[in-house]
Length: 215
Image 1: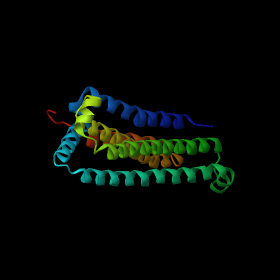
Image 2: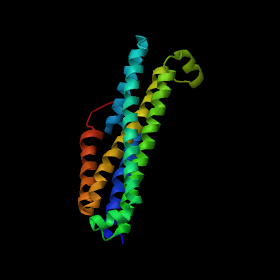
Image 3: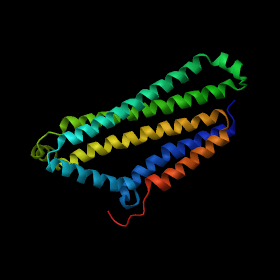
Image 4: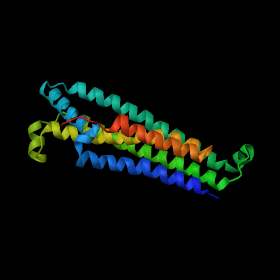
């Protein structure tokens, strides 16, 4: 039987992981001066414009290859973790006896929860790779063609692709982080709940929001 504390921990997780990041992306669009991501977008666009002006396409492509390699590593790690968790489900009865787990149903739900977060992270990383690869393939497109077909400058178009890739990468890496925290749920729902809140507050304070004066 799932306890009320387990249900509360689950709801807090959804609010902190799903709700917070959805709200943050909304703030980036509506109130860019408050979000670090908005400033990074500007810097990326200026960096790409500088590389295009100097025709240093190889530099950008090499950086994209490095980013794609990192995404492949994390995506593979997600698959490995999912495999391990599925193995737990397959051998749940034996594991429950060995670990003397009394509430097998709650344990199964927690395992499925970790698998779901890992699967979500995997999807985010694959989506990130898609945009990185698209950018690496289109980087040599004549700027005037991009302006003619899309109505925006080449550096803005490339910056948009890069931003989407980086957004999915961030969500994927944070999904891995939160899934690591979820292992504490097997030991203590209260510890899990506390860690999720603390980590979310730390991300908000030190990674996501800024006090810069102007864009």
